[in-house]
Length: 115
Image 1 (cartoon, one colour):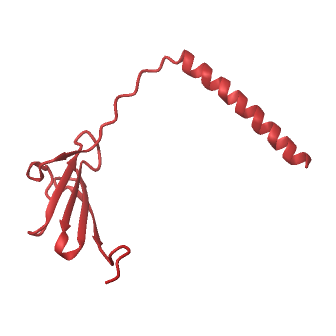
Image 2 (tube, helix red, strand yellow):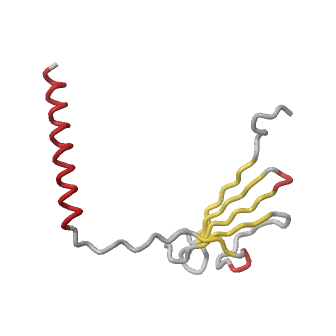
Image 3 (cartoon, one colour):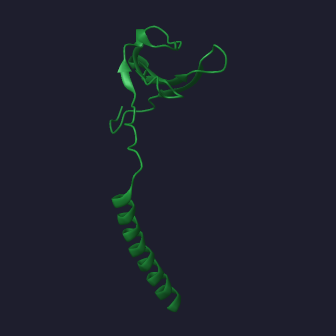
């Protein structure tokens, strides 16, 4: 009983000191504003800097952010007739070859529908 009473008291006091500490930090902060986050933007697949081998017949989407270190592009290829989606992240590698990581997803069953 005494132990939990001590823990509660400790938690309350640290909580109140954190709140006042936060208030002091935000009111006297002189740190520069953080630059806006750069997000990936969709691009035309033919404008991609890195090529990823994709068989014909796939619908392709590419997102890019060339200010990012890795990955700089995200590629998706949908093979609707096969129920398969391939994803790849691509960026600069060592030497001239790009660094590529790929995943393949296959639909195993329809959701909630009896076949």
